Image (cartoon, rainbow, N blue to C red; front, side, top):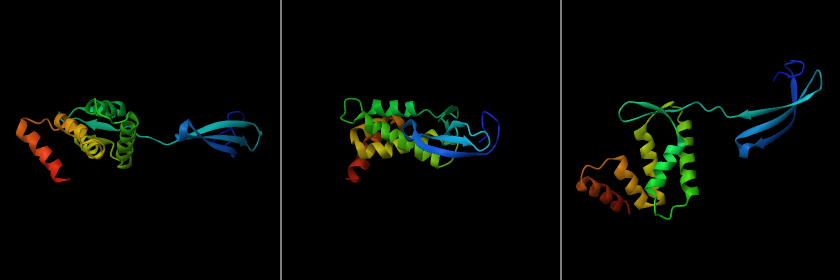
Length: 151
């Protein structure tokens, strides 16, 4: 890290501590030549993810859209917002760890359904009915029967 005062490339870390609720690390450094101190922040590199929609169009991944879709599915249910936020964080982390920069929307939908099934079955069915675009009552009943068999 170059010193902002004398441009020397050598410095030593004097102090490190978490910052932004653990999202970054704040480091106090001291230049080995001029002995002045300066602060740097280290953050995890996050590459942008692109969602490939069913129609082939592409959009930047937006966790708030994911969260809003789950909130709609959980309307008038007893699912805490913190739970939905945690699920959205887990899904985002899963997608980032897979290292694919282009993600089919189907993959995201499957992850949401997998998580919602464990949290609230009614919300799961609501989400699945929109996500899977049930054409008629029989396809809807097939999904319900699958859910009942798993119990």
